[in-house]
Length: 389
Image (cartoon, rainbow, N blue to C red; front, side):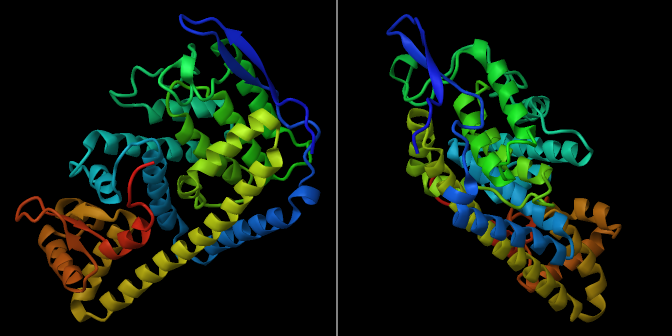
């Protein structure tokens, strides 16, 4: 379909060659996208898969516990796309107050992403509207580290940034000049909340993600926030009760296609090609997330059944197991505090769980030992290993 230009260019003088910065037109695209005609089958499949994923949460004994693991898995994958290295075990060690075994600085930044997402979800559940203010609040939490302190945490940028290349002069893409960022983001917020455009939420989320990445409103963290934007929109619209859908692994596995299609929307206005890719990702990821949620729930249930067959020792072991489901990494002191059991009782329970292959001690020390709920973490860890980017 022939489309009108998706934006304009503003030439900005620089010490080197002049730079052409792209200023996107407000959404929705012109002429209007007709999802039922151009995306019908894919849109139906993605919406069905998303509905099934949401329905899974009604069958789980405690959906929030499964969401806990999914949020951390997404934080690791989304951070790895940006070259920030952390493992699931390191992240949970950090959250348990223990030093990460490798890359402590990167692990802190990954933990900040978890904090930012949880803040966004908590605000939405408290009745706050999805807004640029909320994105800035999340950004401040995301960059709450020494490395991020110089990158204007919580503020839209006031200088020109670029994507790809070593400098403005050889950049692959130059987002809008800083003087246009406020207006572009105001237009994006207006589009997200427009009830009269006739677009399904899934389509709007796909369009909004591209627009956010095109505007690149912050000096740092745009990729991570832009990916969270999708899940936040789906939760805010009520399509998901728990934040179980994350596309970072799909984008990572299809990185070259992802960036090519983002650029094509800017150059040619081919929004439909992007949306087909996006909806296929939603379908694939929703189906995989449903399998992971069910597998995690079954693993927890199977372990509880095995513990329940251990006679008199089962009662305290089940309490410790439940605490490890809530936080899969812990030491004796923290587990004693959370269960109300004595330290010797917790120690005995952990020895039982270790003998059953449910938990694993990860320090190799006699003092200050840390235990992980290994069987549960193994389910969550799938897809988080491998090279960055």
